[in-house]
Image 1 (cartoon, rainbow, N blue to C red):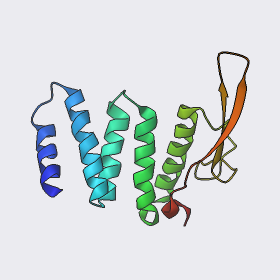
Image 2: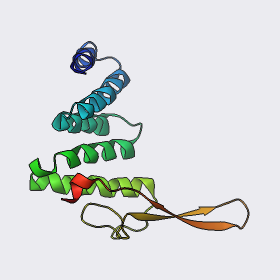
Image 3: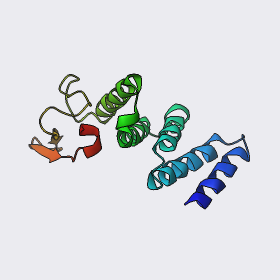
Image 4: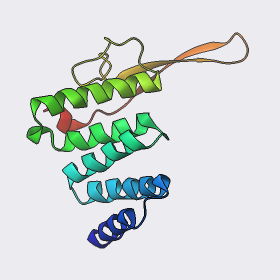
Length: 141
């Protein structure tokens, strides 16, 4: 894993003409950092993607908040507030959780992690589904 991290890090510094190439490297560096339990590095790469890439702000905000969950005990109060804000942004980006304010302090829906989703089909048929997403355990302690 450390060899992959070294190669992707060198790749980033090899050129400045194609920022999308940097984004691919940051994506790989994020996952290599997560698999290597280098949480602060993962936060750094997710933040670079969140700031520089236009592909999916929702995904990058979630990746950053998820990496921050892994180092919950090391976060400052300001970083905890940033993490909460990131999870709220994810909720708003996805558009599945209703109005802001229906969330706990970590940005999760108040109904035990159950998110109501309304699906309307082309006919007048409408269904209300409830999905349950597992909450990251380390964030809750």
